[in-house]
Image (cartoon, rainbow, N blue to C red; front, side):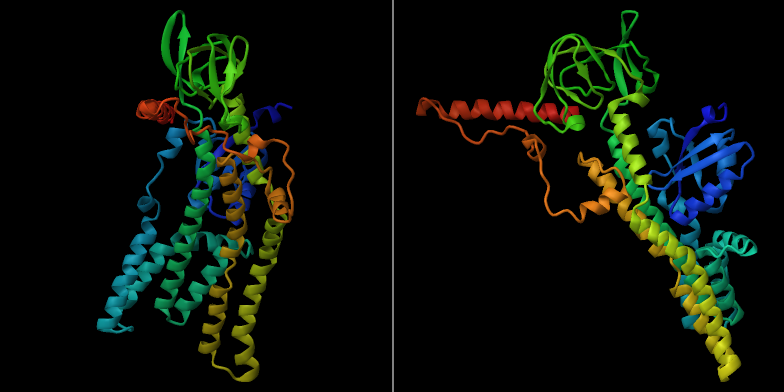
Length: 443
């Protein structure tokens, strides 16, 4: 019971593929003091039961240079991560060496010492992390994508094809960088949900009004919301009367009247009067926080297609390695083929057969779809239901407000006197401008 009470969730930065997620989860489970661990690849989070530290978790994810952060850490701090260039500096340097090597090859020849040295440097710099993980997997007889690529590059070096070896390294590094970029973009849609509610609120404590960060606001604090401001916390109205736009929470764009003892939600917009609200929930328990949690859980649920792809890749990688080995060995031994030629063919099979893109394609699609749907106000509770949506032929709705924007617009006006047409139009335009300015201010 005491171990279950120590369950904690951490954010993961740098997680680019389901294979890496599974490996990281396995490593964390083997840490002393950890009783259970579950990685949510879509949300890029890990839930850990037991006693551990962030340093130990980062050591468990060192094979992909994962960065671990506390889930409760300020979102602004989470976003202040390394730039794209800094994160991919080895890739950029390796690519530079390859370009210089190509120039050297054209001017000095492929067999020149400088040309070979440049290609070797490109392989070492660009493939260091790949080799480290690949050798580790080979020792454990774990036929991962890294071990497959390591065998291919060692083979290329063995037959003296340094250019091909460096190209394999750089292509794999580029694919890893693109996969990481794709997943980061997909997860960004969830972070955009977090921006719905303000990070600070005006709180009255001991008759003093002060701006307080939402994570430092306590239950029963008095929150003051002025016209045009977004509400930062869930609570009950204790003073004031206003209309609140709750579209971000309920989907209904028509403002709702709020008065004494009415409930208000974080992320909604106060449009008219000043409201005094008694906070009833911590920032982690607000309605918008629960919606975000549901979306993250939905991203963690595996769709049938994803489960099939993961299972397929598990058997596919060893199959490719065995096939490549047979291509290298059988023709020279039984049919008098040239060893160099068939070794080259076997290495080509290893490179072409890498299942990395196959494995990453389904989770990226699911995470992107669920995240973008949530951003647009639609909550899909997992990849299973997302796939089922594709089979729908008809949908029945019971609320017209759900399908329409619900935002009134001026389409026409009728004047009692033709002499006052311009005046009416001027007044309507002014009202429209005021409304637009209030909306911009709220955003």
